[in-house]
Length: 342
Ligand code: NAD
Ligand code: UD1
Image (cartoon, rainbow, N blue to C red; front, side, top):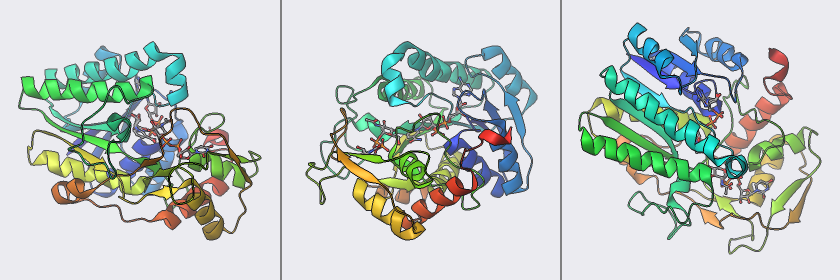
């Protein structure tokens, strides 16, 4: 069965392609390398020991996308391609709306024109906005007012758009996967997260402090109502997240229509829990100081992952120590990410 993976050279996409290839799927990757490098694809091949088709293509380019569907018998699409930097989305919102929303419209139109109506979409826990209760369950309402940035709003708008698409045509099978905080790397240390410039997210920042590229972590606030005052999140190992996509494909194969699922562990860790675990597991010291809160941050966010367990048959397997170990393994083996490889 052939699966088209948009954004397959990126962080989550590359790990998902490894799992798909491992499970015997034929994989076709589309990426324009806006935020990724060709080396990631060479390593996907090396890890899996299997080849796949690759098209360097922008998903906004309907004609090229259409040719890919003409040339291949595509059963389902996993759609990762999009822009994801929260801060940047506030500076250039139209670029984000265009790439994320128009990109998804173009993709769905081309899919429909080729009779391919099976889609797995990369959504985010951000669609819940400011949490009304913890843990977050799929019955909680989405909250456009509570989403603090254009990036997050693109995810919510795409979810609503895909629901309308399904209402208009019940032949579609669509899984909306709401990721919590993906971290970690493949255990081989060959692929991992390779952020551009100074990382915004916690784990890549910690690992760059550990390797000496950055001097000090600033912990954004220690006066939140949490066990140690620092923000609590549901960190999930990227390989577990990747397995969640394979499980979603199985669900789609049963022609279930449209539904949405939390992909998280159900366990919340604070910023200082992560720092301490990283230090303990990897035998390193993280230089940090307590700084002010980051605007837009919430105190606590973690999932109830029961629905994914019951309906997708999926559950995260890897704990915080493995997440810290694998991040460090990737960082040590690739101090400059994929940069010196091309
Ligand atoms: P990433 O930036 O590493 O991967 C996205 C890939 O899409 C990149 O390889 C990029 O080059 C490609 N791309 C972007 N626009 C494209 C276009 N127009 N045409 C073709 N390719 C294009 O990001 P990621 O962390 O792997 O995230 C994947 C998806 O999951 C994104 O949609 C993101 O919004 C979503 N998501 C990520 C997180 C996270 O914390 N990483 C959390 C929630 C949701
Ligand atoms: C952020 C995005 C979210 C996106 C997610 C991807 C915001 C408001 N939300 O979530 O839309 O889907 O990344 O993983 O930006 N922290 C520090 N110091 C740092 C960096 C982070 O203390 O240098 C803290 C944060 O305050 C937070 C925790 O670490 O408590 C996690 O932060 P981060 O990795 O940026 O993820 P989120 O804020 O949960």
